[in-house]
Length: 179
Image (cartoon, rainbow, N blue to C red; front, side):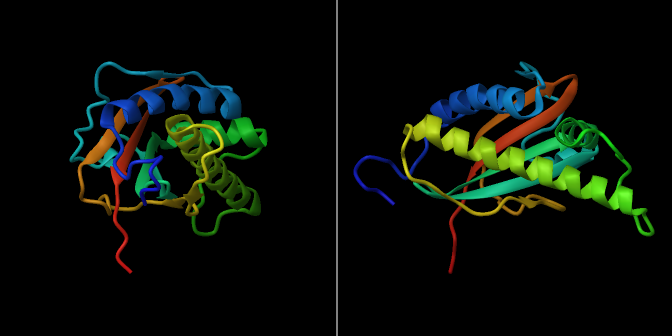
């Protein structure tokens, strides 16, 4: 979409800068956690799956307007648990497993809800900061990623963060829908 105001191509440097500013703000406001960019890599090459390096929770949200792109967040399982503990009071943090108790199932749902909502807010924050407040945008629902990345295209921007000592990687990718 090109309405004369917005380009259909994101500037990688500007996108990385906006993400680097949005991520600490969203983590601080939603989870009361400090997220600091890391100068060196967590040891995850762009072509690698973060789950191969650390036990990762990988989530994504597709942004459809004003640009078509995907925002992916990979974080350690421990960080996902800490976010759920902060947002839901840390009642039960057992992982979901076959035969799990109702409390463990509820804890797993809290973890899923909190990480997906965090990404949803991050996507909105990124788009507002990149294109300006009041710019209309359209997002799909956030979802979990399993296995290798579904989007083979190289990233537009990738930033790595230390969130209270735990790894988080945010990747912005270009996507094209085929209907």
